[in-house]
Image (cartoon, helix red, strand yellow):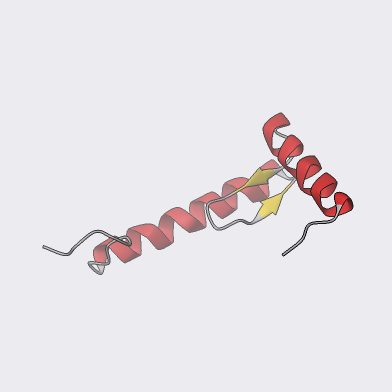
Length: 65
């Protein structure tokens, strides 16, 4: 897959915005510029992770005991 200069520039701009704190991204890749939405995304992700742990789910590459 070939990346055009424009796509590379857009990717760099997104990465720069993340580093400057202008954009927030969670572990699932959701991005937002609103800090409140970012916090809500993190909370919902945390809730899902807690539920998976209660159900006994384990992460990839971790054998169940």
